[in-house]
Length: 166
Image 1 (cartoon, helix red, strand yellow):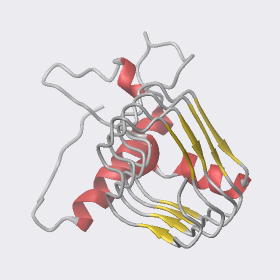
Image 2: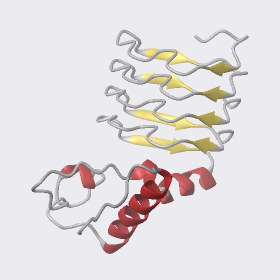
Image 3: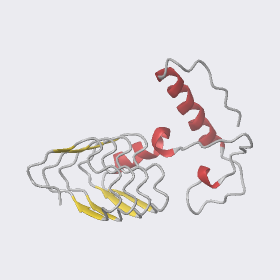
Image 4: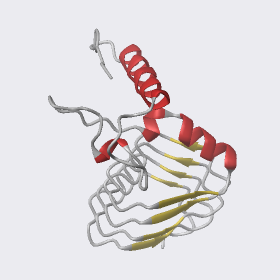
């Protein structure tokens, strides 16, 4: 359990703690900062209190044993890549429907592109559980990928151009 006098769980606080399998965050904590639980491969259970308002980038990335997480309605911001490479994550419950909509519409949080030289966008990385994997991406998803790449290029001065053909 995180002590009650802690307000923010700082960057990388538990990063790589492979022996951590369960954690309850005390009421009063307002933010889970970036990489807080990054790579906690044994983490299966986490309780986030109603006091948390922000979850940082990569906060739970590579928590490969995490299967379900409940995001309380107090959370107003979830940064990008929060659940990247959480291979066994089957369910994310959003208590706030607006946050759920934001999460679904923001491609930085929903699309992970792992292209290879033979990429045909039919690989299992491109689809959510339960969707047929023998078809190409739908037009809406391709548009989201393009939008994401355009925004990424604008935000990174060192990248001049990326041409994505879908």
